[in-house]
Length: 438
Image (tube, rainbow, N blue to C red):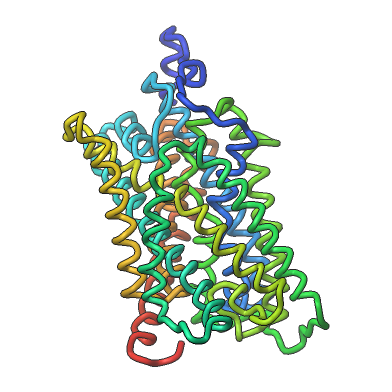
C-alpha cells in the first residue's frame, strides 16, 4: 500500500489531527447531535410507509441490512479520507477533495480521472441536498396546512402557497454560517423529534394492534420504493465530512464506541420500532410521514404535527450548509472582498427560493423522498464510498482481494437501488400529475 511504502522510505507519518486548526470546533456531544439530526428527521417518520411497501418481515430485515451497509460505507469513506490526509499531508479533506485525492494517489491509469471524480462528487452533493431542502419545504408546508385547514376553516390555501410563505423564515434561518451555532438548533430539533416519536408511539400502542391483515412480504414492484425511502432515511453522508472535520477530537468519530457507532445504532433502533409498529397500526393508509396519519382533533397529535414542523425547520440550515459550502468554494474566489457578504446573503436567499419553487411545482412528498434517495443518496452513500476504498487500497486489496469483491457487491447494490428506485418514483410522479392514484 502507498502509506506503507512511504514508511519504508523513512518518511515520517503525518498525523492530520495534530495539524487541524478549526475556528469553532465541536465536542463529541455536539457532533453526535449534528450527525443524528442529519440521519433523523423526515426519514424517521417515513419509515412506516416504507414498511407498507415492503411488508413487515422484509422491512425489518431490510432495515437492519441497509443500516449495516450504510454505516459501513460511512466508515470506509471517512477512513479513506483520513488516509488521503496523511498522503497529501493535509489536516482535513472534504467529500469531493477525498475523491480527488483518492484518484490522484491511486493507480496510474486512474489518475487522469481525479478531477472528474471531484466534480462528479460535488455535483451529486449539491443536488442531493438541494433535493433534501425541497423535501423539507414540502413536509413543513404539508404539516402546517393540515393544522390550519382543520382549525382555521375560513383560511384555506393550497400547499403551493404554504411553500411560498415558508421562504421568508427559511431565508432568515440559512443566514447562520457556522456549524457550531447550528448545534443548539440541532439539539432542540432532536428533542422535538424524540417528542414526536414518543407521541407517535402513544397513538400506535394506544389501541389493540392487529397483525393478521398485514403483509409480511409486500409486492415486489414496490420494493424499490422501500429501498429508496430507507436509504434516504439512513444516509447523512454529505454532512459526515463537515461534522468530522469540525470535531475537537476527530479520532473519536470512528472506532467502538464512537460517534458513528452510537449514531447509527440509535438510528437503527428508532427506525425499526417506528417502521414496524407504525405499519401494524395504520397499514396501507399510511402517508408520506406518519404524523399526517395522526388525528387532527387530539392535542397530543396536534403537538406532534407542530413539533415535526419546527424540528424540520431547525434541521433545514444543517443540510443547507452542504449546498452553500460547495457554492462558496467555487464562487467566492471570484468575488471581490467588499461584495462577499452581500453575495452570501443573496445566494442563500436565491437557493431557498429555488427549493420553494420546486416544492410548488412538485408537491409530492413521498415521491420526492423516493427519487432523492434512489438517485443521489445511492451515489453518495453507497457507490462512491465503495469505489473510493477500492481505488485507495488498489495495491493491497486484502487476502483473496476481499476488499474488491466486497465493494463490487456494494456498488452493484447501489446501482440496483438507483435504477429501480428512480424508475418507480418517476412513474409515481407521472401518475399523480395526470390525476391517477399510486
